[in-house]
Image 1 (cartoon, rainbow, N blue to C red):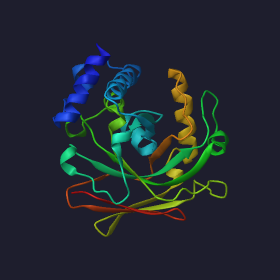
Image 2: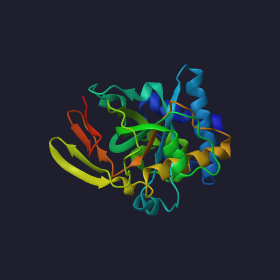
Image 3: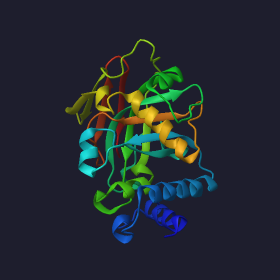
Length: 257
């Protein structure tokens, strides 16, 4: 199994918008550790092309999704500068395969954070603030027929992100209790609270810092961390308009063309 070759296959699938069959079928012995090494090879390829890391995303943070995939912890991926959409900027559906939209709480870090041993308190101490965010996930694996190693190798199915315009300090917030509503084309499709994310969104970020320590990677000041979906992802088509509202943090809109 050549990690770089698999990373190049995934990059080609993304660039040409031609999905692959599940990696776990092609490589039956593919482990989670293998998958993270493939992901890191893929990020190295993109950095060599001039793309920059702006943060990380955490996925599979809900107990329901973990149960569905038969795992007991989240996964993570890298956020790159060309994934970022400005608030009000349309997302071009034709650039993606089968995109889905998630509402998440984004953390912006003011100091470096490195595991092991990182706690919720450590995360809150180094957080400049939080804001609403859309994550648009997409799979380079055909029809989302993924197991955990498939999505990890595929950079945790990352595609695009949109951030709110106001950074809110966390000092007086209980992130577990902040409510979120996601609307699609004017109708509410889901709602939830921060506690849906690994019990506490900052616990999700702490998990990430500790997991990255396995690869001697730190979270750096200025990085954006998407802490995980509050509710289930919603499929997106050209013409769809999504509105995300977090109580006390503001709202955010996203349009697909």
